[in-house]
Length: 334
Ligand SMILES: *[C@@H]1O[C@H](CO)[C@@H](O)[C@H](O)[C@H]1NC(C)=O
Image (cartoon, rainbow, N blue to C red; front, side):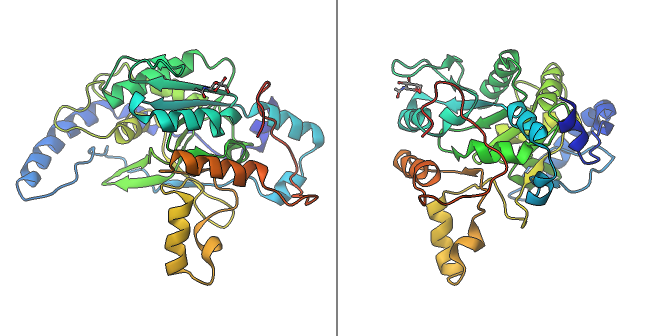
């Protein structure tokens, strides 16, 4: 268990947010007045007022380099591959049934555990029936449920059924990261002072991040279940705010060349955009070889992605990967 932690490169958890409680409430009230005044003057995107102590810009989280991988011993590598196990929290509604079925039959099989959380029960599909319509309350309940059923899994991945995910690349990104440190990773966006991981491209949380979050769920002032009273924030921003008060900050997942690994768009959309914008370098310009997610995919596009990622191959070609992530037992591994 030790080695993953030794490989950790000088990352210190930031706890400075934990003591900012009372100033937040003052901030909320002042910010609320400020927001009401501003909204009289036209469109204004509300943000959570930030505590006095400013946090610097978000981190850029990259996977271990190929060279660094080669330095690991065989036992270190096999320990690491066994340690990175992912619990997939997939938020569905009966309305998204086609995507739900497609996700069940494609990428989610590569999660070590995948659980569907549904707003209402479904006759066709198995899910945790949340009997709840509010997206933020649903998300909170799903996270608590996942934490209580983690069963030794130390990484959580939250996705919608329209997000195609390559779980092995997600594992590679967090391979040498210590899940007992607070990690909150994905495609980072900024809204005012709040940096949050965008929901449709998937949200990765370490065990420690979820643990802190669940404690924060009890704090009705800083992380209210009913949302902040003066305005309604989207659930991705609510989540980021609660995490921020727990000292957990959003980190952008990138490859070695700085290309984003979590994509807000589908691969087809990104490629067609790139054909017009970068006709000489279409794929290189848009899409990482180690991409983790593509969003807004149709259910049939997901089947094509499965073919492209897991089945189509050049016979006899060796990718020289240093290690293998095996799919969970009883998975048909397509
Ligand atoms: C969902 O996936 C499970 C496990 O792979 C499978 O047994 C089940 O038939 C799938 N459900 C549907 C409706 O495709």
